[in-house]
Each structure stands twice: as C-alpha cells, then as structure tokens.
Image 1 (cartoon, one colour):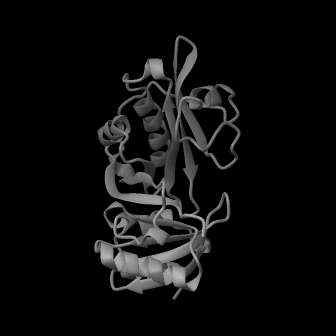
Image 2: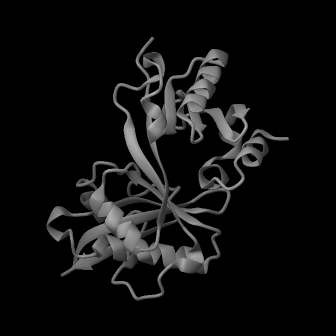
Length: 240
C-alpha cells in the first residue's frame, strides 16, 4: 500500500487528503485509527513539514511528535482546534490561520459573469495583486492554467487565477480586487468565470484556500456555493 493509499484508507472522505496532497510529496506517514499525519518537503524553501489531521487534539499532537522523533520538523500544520495543545517546541510563533473550501463542479452557478479571460502575461495583473496580502502567484507563472479579470471603464480592477493539480482538481488562487472597487461583486465574477471553465472541462472538484478570518472572502465564496471543510494553523517552528 502506498503512503497516499494508507492515508485514504484511514480517512476515506477527507477532502484534504483526497485532493490537496500530491502522492510524490509524501515521506513518512503515521496513523492512529482515523487520525493521520505525514511529512513532506515544502516546495519553495525545502523545509521539512509535518501535517496531522483528526478531531482529537491529543491524538493529533501525538502524531506530530512521532513525526518529529523520526526526523526533526521545521514546520507544522494541524487543525485549528489542536494548535493550542502543541508543545512549545512544535508550535509556530507566527502561525497562519487558514481554511479550505470545496465545491462540486455540478453546483457551479450557471449565471452570466462580467469577467473575461486574460493573457497569462498581462502586466496589469500584477498591478492589481499589489493590493493583496496573500497572493503568491503572479503574471507569467507557467503553472497557472487560466487568469480571469473584471474591467471597469477599460481598467482592470479584479483578478483571479486557476491552477490544475495532477489529480485533476482545479484550485483558485491570487484572487484580488483593487481597494476602490471592492464590495461590488468583481472578485465573485472573476472566480465564477474560472469555475465555469473548469466545470466545462470536466474537473472532478474545485477548491480554494483563504485566511480564515477574511470575512469578505467568506461572503464571496459562500455566495458562489463553496463549503468550508476545515480550518488549520500552519507555521514554521522556532529555530532550534
């Protein structure tokens, strides 16, 4: 049984495991009934990262400790409710608080949208993303399958990107609207166009990640039909 198969057997309905994990990234895997944990090497900076999932904070902590004993961890992701139970040596001093959202492509709204597709190297994209505190994908990124945007009086005011994972899932990212145009549904339109294109191409699911306390984003994605499936804390650990 492969590491990914082991995780799926333990948590067969968990969308985090089904869609967000790349099999080739998995290293150590530990299981305690329906609680699981694994290590991977982070893409950008190569940190040794441990992730654990489960509803019992004590069991989540034990799994993270088992991973750390096998190979010292440099970063940790756990369900938000388990973060406060981590020992100080395995607790990030500045954790990100984020949530994971999914929608079945058959539930994507059929309505029209004001958004248009953008060229992947459109320099106006980055001018919009200057106003984002979370974007990590910009114009010219070859991993982006499609960009969408909304223009008002010829000016690009909102953008969103879609990246396709190896498992076929479509992920939305780098969603941003310039401050003076917010609150008018432009981000919703940009996302909706990407969702409709992905649905028409037969993707099995569509997902996104966002800061969990982003209330404007929460309203937008709820209106689009997304369901929040979990909240997590992630961060680098204190230097040893």
